Image (cartoon, rainbow, N blue to C red; front, side, top):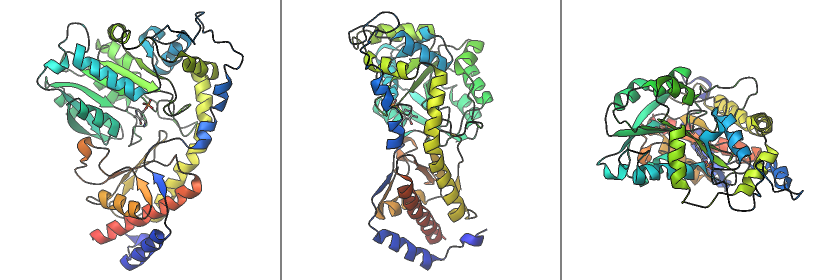
Length: 416
Ligand code: PMP
């Protein structure tokens, strides 16, 4: 079916050359908040203007102490994760750094008392739902973890395959984004969460790295995805040491300047805390206090996220409307319609993603490299492109989409 969007190669080539001639310089490569979103958190910088630096337990946050985080920030994240505050370690400004650190501890010390450090094992394999987050894959690669890609659908990774792979004793973990996933926008269903908690793993120290970076990032107030509480599911199945949960305020307050946190079972937290204790004296508690004065509880975060959504939602809708108008009916192209997160996942005809990204780049529009959403940058079908609509201003986004849709048409037409 090619209907209204029939591919007239000469016309498309002409249009593409015209767009190329505009000398554009646009960037849709990373999921960054735009300036208006960052401005929403300026008041946070004034929360200590009254010179009151004393946190809840009477400590002056300008001084050393409380390496697990101030009580109010641990409580805030506990509410977000749905666990108790004692199960939370609040850290510095980067959850990805915290994930990387947690894995490093697994390699040096083992995941917990009594387990062999992974560095002493011959092979470490991880289940990696794909398409996924490029930073996860780079971290795994850096640590020599063999990545086993598993296809993700609307309700999460193919669980039959995950359960099959977990029977291999070399498979020590899985790393994933369970909500408004980067880049698919999918949220794991209740059944997926339950099966991840319940499944048998041959490795007794299997760790599920639950990177919940987008847990508060809904686009629509009345129409949200819900993610089941993985920790509660694990408790039900007696696997509570399996999961390590992470998040941050990078896309709530300031990207790279927020506060991150890890939550896990009391045993995991005690083990990690004993090691973190000597990794630093304490994290930046001034920033932690600023955050909790500005966003004291989950309700406050939700209200703040509605303001983000008001800025982000029109950009997502512009992308979806443009794709529908320009590419609707074109064979072999598909895209997601996420209800939250930072990305729209575009599926080009097989063998076209690299070409589309190159065509865009040559016309001045930078996209996430094709393949980046797969381990080692290898998308077996060369079809997934991650669209990150948040950063460019709307007029630039419109231009970028014109280039993108033209590049898709050109690649599709030349393929025929
Ligand atoms: N996890 C995911 C899934 C992300 O998309 C991002 C940001 N792109 C991060 C982690 C990074 O978070 P942080 O800034 O807290 O390191």
